[in-house]
Length: 252
Length: 291
Image 1: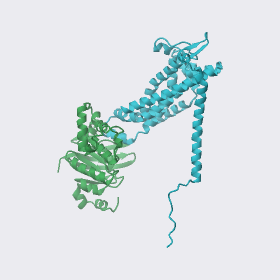
Image 2: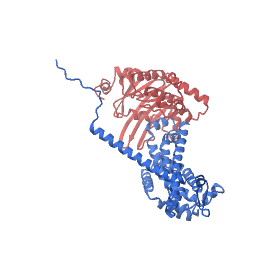
Image 3: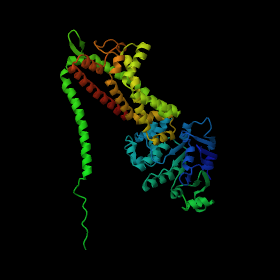
Image 4: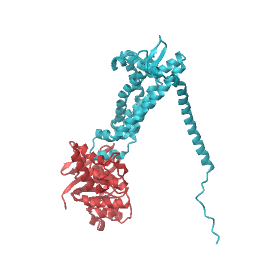
C-alpha cells in the first residue's frame, strides 16, 4: 500500500441541529483514486468539502476531530487556507468556468498565488491544459471566452484550472454527473492518467464509475463511514451487509 | 380500408385568443413608442429654434437681454461628474460590504430598509437637509459643492441597491470555484464579483445620472438658482460658488419668466446631454469588459 496522504480521525460535522458526519476515520493513500459512494444525503459531498475547508464559509457549521494532511492538521489555528487550497484542489459537480478567457481561467489560480510572469504563466497554462487532455481542442482559442466551450470541455477546463496551482490532492465532487457518456469516458481516462502524479478523492453516484476508476472505495451511509477497502474487495467481497445491499441495488 | 385523413401541420392557423393578445401587446408597445417620440419630438420642435451658437456658448446678459446657458451646462456636468466620483465608490463599496462582509443579518436588514426608504422620499427633503447640514453647518454656503454632496446622498441608495442586486445575481459556482483555488475574499471580489456585476453597477450609474440631471428642487436650495457668469478660476473656485444646473434654469425660465421658447431649448439640450452621458457610460462599460 502507498503512503498515506491524508487521514481523518473522529471527524464530526454538525450543521445546526443536524449531525451530518458521525466520526469519520479514513485514510487516503498517495497516488491512488479513492472513491466515495453512498446514497444521496449520506454526507459524502460534505465530507469532501471538509478536506479543503470549503465549509468554513457556511454558517452554523461545527467541525470537530482531526484532518491530517502530510502530518499537519488542516483545522489548526495557524493554517493558511489559501495555501491549503493550493495544495488541495477541487473540481465541482457542474462545470464552473469563470466568465473570462480560457487562458485567464487557467491562470487564475497561479495569479492568486502571486505568479505574474507572462512566460511562466504561458507555460503553466499549456502544461495544465495538456495534462487535462484538452490542449489540442483549445490551443487556437485561448483568448476566447471559456463559456463558449461544450459542457464536457468546460469540465476538463475546470480540471486543468485546478491542476494549474500544482495541487497534490485533488477532490472531485461528482465531476461527470452533468456530462454525456462520451465526455464522461474522456474524464475517466483523464483521472486514470492523473493518478500517476496526484492523489484523488472522488465522490460518485455511479457505481460502475467507482468500480472502473478507483483503487479504494469508501461506502458512506447516513453520516457514517460503513466500509473502506480496496475497490476489488468492496465490490466483490464486501464485509458489511449494508455495503452489499447498496452495491447490489437493494436500496439507495 | 378507410384510413382517417392525415392531419396537416402546414398552413398556419391563427388562434383567435393568441391573435388578440399579440394585437394588444403590439398596440401597447406602439403606444409607448409613440408617446416617447411625441414627447421628444415636441420638445425638439419647440426647442431647436432657440438653440443658437451664442445660446450654447455664452452666459445670460440681462443688459443686452441675450440668453445663454453655457454656465449651466458646465454646472450640470460638474455636479454629475463629482457626485458620481463620490457616490460610485461609496455605493459599490457599501453594497460589497452588505452582501459579502456584513455578518449581522439584522443590521443589514435595517440598512437596506433605510436605504429603500431614502430612495423613495421627495427630493426637496434632501434639499432642506443639504441646506441645513452642508450649506449652514459645514459652512459650505450655497454652492456647487453643496449640490454635489446633496445629490450624492440622494443617489447613494440607488447605487447601492442596483449593485447589491447585481452581486446577488453572480452564480454561486463562480464563488466556489474561486475560493476552491485559494482566492481570498478580496481577490474574489476584485476579479470575479465586481467584473460580473459591472452591468448592474452601470445601470445604477445611468439611473443616478438621470436623477441628478433632472433634479431641480433640492439644487435650487443648496446650489443656487441662477448662473449669470461664465465659468472662471480653478475647478475648486467654481465648485465653491453657487450656480444653477440646466433643470433649475429650465424651471426659472418657464416659471418666473414665461419664456417657454428658452425653456424648451434647455430641455432639448438636457435630452441630448442625458443621451450622450448614457452612451459614454456604455462605452466605458464596453472598454472595461474588453480588458
